[in-house]
Amino acid sequence: MTDELSREMIRDVDRSEVIGAHLIESPVLGPISPKELSGGVKTLILMALDDKEQIFNASACGDNCAKWILKISRMKNLTINLRHIMDFGEEPMEAKILNTGDMVHNMQEFIGIAGKFV
Image (tube, rainbow, N blue to C red; front, side, top):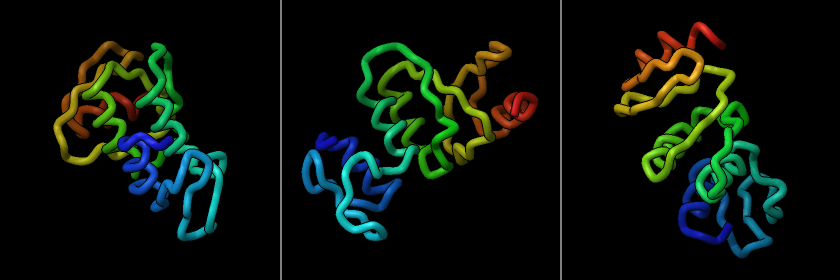
């Protein structure tokens, strides 16, 4: 919670500042505990810090989490479940769609394949 990557994600996604391990200052809710962070940022923190190979439910994440998913995936192998078309932007990416085995390299390719499943 207090590592720099988690602080950056909380600041960007929830617009909140980590004061300490058990206190976050939210501009909307005031002082909150980590339990009250958005589902998206909690999922991102798990993606970044969990060292077990597992499938993360990225459906809890909005489009404001997409750049962080890409950043985390450049640091480690990441498998996500996604039940909506997330906007990953114009940045080149490399992802394997497990449903088909196809590799995608940009948003257009992603939509072409993922659109069949969501």
